[in-house]
Length: 149
Image (cartoon, rainbow, N blue to C red; front, side, top):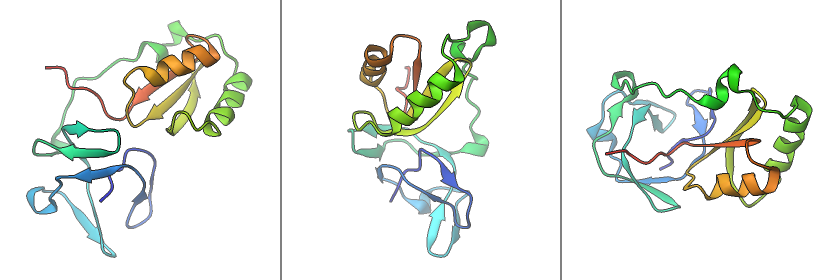
């Protein structure tokens, strides 16, 4: 079973890729859809990540019922624009997707920065990009985030 964290093709059924998910039971969740032998849904999920497999540790919540506090990203604020040009960021983006050090789910230039979406960053991916391209050029964003307790 796959935990979709990157782009999802809007086919029917949807298609995606991602890490393995363990401990998931479709019989225990509401809001699932099935077609052509594929079952899917959108959920807020809590669990553990070992670098390869995501293991569910709490009952999932249908995303339609989940209302997290909005998180404002200061790097998307026009008043805090980065110094890189669109051409520089496009070049970095192409280089990044040929780099096998950090596996990017997606990337996009915005507000003078190149945002890179990864499965999980413990800080090492951001440090790698800061060292390689300079601070405040690439902004790493994790699909999986640590829970603040």
